[in-house]
Amino acid sequence: MTIVMQSQNFHFFQQELGIRIQAARKQQGYSQEKLAELLDMHRVSVGYIEQGKQSPKLSTLFQIAEILDISIKDLIPD
Image (cartoon, rainbow, N blue to C red; front, side):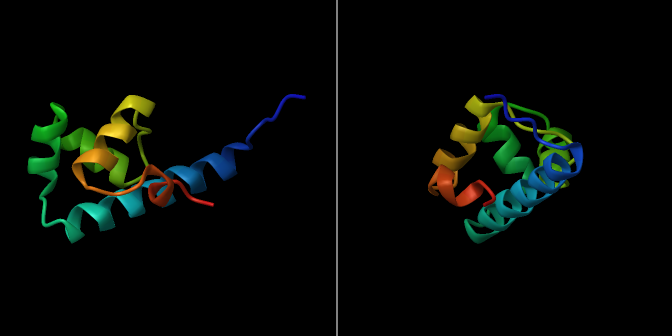
């Protein structure tokens, strides 16, 4: 069985993921610049992820969860 995610659902997923990452980042008191530095990536990339314009690699998502001291399950939209 193949599961295909409709592009509209994926866009919602990206946006919600970004919102959750941004909320967790702010709760920990990190700026986009600081999170980007800890991830060894450009601040603009973090901004694009938070805006839902870019999807993080799975490895980056795990790093974000670790840095922000949050369960990866709390970042993933239902």
